[in-house]
Image 1 (cartoon, rainbow, N blue to C red):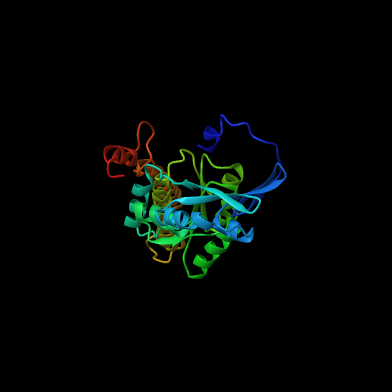
Image 2 (cartoon, one colour):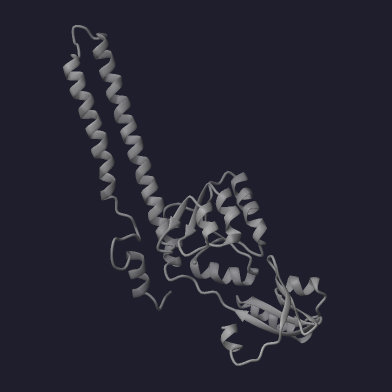
Amino acid sequence: AVLEGASGITLPETRDFANIEGKGASAQVEGATVLLGNRRLMDEGKVALGALEEPGERLKGAGRTVVHVARGGEILGLIAIADAARPTAKATVAALRERGVKVAMITGDNAGTAKRIADELGIDIVLADVLPGQKAEKVKELQAQGQRVGMVGDGVNDAPALTQADVGFAIGAGTDVAMESADVVLMKSDPYDIVGAIALSRATLRKMHQNLWWAVGYNVIAFPLAAGVLYPVLLSPEVAALAMSGSSALVAVNALLLKRTRLAGISRGGMSRASAVEHNAVGAAV
């Protein structure tokens, strides 16, 4: 939107551009220092907001991300940005909460913007005004409270937190470093696939437990019989070999039954169930 607005403007030469992590950016334009960023950057640059302070706070209170523009230490204007949640984000949060998963949002946005999105999606835990380098620390704090944390992210700044989390979920359309840091990559970039990934993981774990207990139970019975503990009841080598083959086949078939697991939100073709729900209820609709 900013680029489109500036499309018909002759732009002066810009030098010494610098990205200021978690705050904004600065550059030299026609010999003057231009600052572009949040209130924290303005305070550090000793820029008085003057008459724009009240509109800025009002926009923040309305859940907008406010970008301040200053030149030579004087405020020029504000740019208000409103984040839009992904179509399936609300359904994702609801489905996770139904499965007993606590959902938290961690963001560098101001508290007003974070609360607006959180209220829209039904998220109770909000960690706002978090600098990029602090995301991993926030994950550590949750883990220190005894929580097992799954982190979902798509940017370079999310990579340390994705690595720190017990399970990292990267969005398929995200940066390469985020996908390399994560344990799971959502190829469709649909947050509802997180629900399907958790369902598949739990189904796989159930199959592992079933097969483990079947193998243990089989051997607990077969070993004493083969060793003659219950003589004269014996297990002949022929029957033992047949039973072992049958046990392996049963374990393999039980594992293949995973293909019958119904994964919410994940389909081989067409619109996913979650997308269909949101499409039908678009009037009511990260």
